[in-house]
Length: 203
Image (cartoon, rainbow, N blue to C red):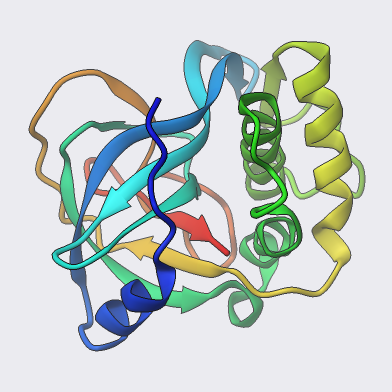
């Protein structure tokens, strides 16, 4: 997998100037395939890790903020730039994780662990992560689950991450799908809203 440049400063300027700026999903960047289970019944294999996005002038990496709806490479959709610290709820918990550990997570196992921690915070938001119980469960190599549990401990460490909330105006082009489309709400329920784009977190 090729590395995607992290150029969030220019992205922030671009997003802030428009109510819903178009971005394109470029593909997975660093992570691994894991098995997840939603609500005790929907089991699937999906990529967990950092994803690449771009707009007309910049590109960056993010982690997915909605595990419930697939996203396709090449998909174009609108996003709004928000701050996780101002949204509260589970979005803020997940944003705290990203603010503390996004840059530190570099290897595929670390990036996958970061993604699992974010999904767990958004779906369950429990004081301690249990990846065998709750709305979000995951099966992954022990090293990934250890990173996920370690990163999850930052849920109550105040921080601020860039939250790119999908405007749910997606159009799909291209092939394979991965978890991560749909819109997450300020309360952080992580529920998808049908076809659309991907809400994301970047540091």
